[in-house]
Amino acid sequence: MELVLRTATSDEMLRLLIANQIDLAYTLDQPLRLPSLTLAVNVPEPVCFVAPAGHPLADKVEVPLDVLAQQEFLLTERGMSYRDALDQRLAARGLSSHPYIELGSAAACSRSKGETWEDAIRTVDGYVDAIVMRHPVAGSAIEAAEIAQHPLINGGDGARQHPTQALLDIYTMRKEKGHIGGQTITFLGDLKYGRTVHSLGYFMQQFGNRMIFASPEELRMPKEITDDLRAKGADIVETSDVKAALSQSDFAYVPRVQRERFPDEESYLRGKGSYIVNNELLKCAKKDITIMPPLPRVDEIATEVDSYPGAAYFRQAHNGMYLRMALLGLITGRI
Image (cartoon, rainbow, N blue to C red; front, side, top):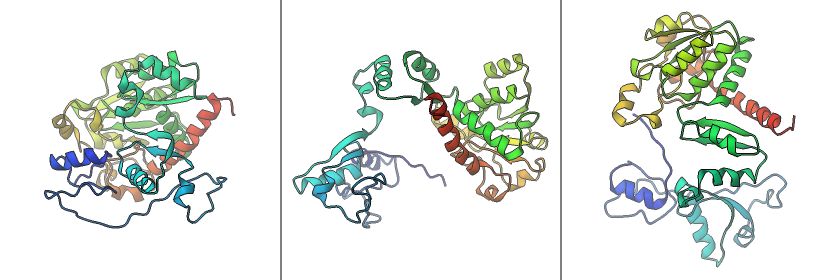
């Protein structure tokens, strides 16, 4: 069974249910009750409001609606069930919410209303000390950095690069093994669309590590990257023999198959589940191999591997918090 979660407005949920494009909708709204739909579960849902520790309401067990309405909120856009539930409850008392920022879909942003790329970057640049940007278009981070006056961190640009993930990966490698260089790392699975492997490959070359690229033919590391790495002196082996690769590797780096980057569903299904790391496969691996997928995972690593001492992925994710804190501190002059 594959579980796919998505967020949508109540209207969009209704449309998807009627079109049989989703199996189940979870909402606080009542209008989804139609003769053609079945109410599977109907339970009370507590709603919690979160405030900073020093906020005047932070130590209150209950807050009257008229007091709550006077606060500035970080809210989802109108049409989302939690937002609508709040607005309806306040409206019944003749009150309204006052969002400081509304978080919504791309359809609600100024970009969808005709704002140019350059204007969007310049506007955001005026609000902040640094910009962290994730964008679906490859190369977008470079373009944005040329426009912005403040430091810009690439949080992932399409299928191209994800440098901060690579930084936390090498930090994790050092914590796990005590050093970074002179080791063998197998990149396993989706190397074509997995932008984290593209960035990490360049770090591995700089530290003198041997790299094994193990993947199905259709998900091989892009040729321009392997050519560039080899031109820089990287030691690279390309193979489809996973067991042989893992038998000589100190690390296995296992990105998920990037469903959102495939041109069509058929191509994704062909690549999905190509290589799965499980306890049986680990029997063929080098002793004390460290497993490092850039979470989230789908099915590329079986949950039975979680108890293996070298399964570093949750430690790896935790390290990302400190690495990114340090990076922000460095580029803004705080440290």
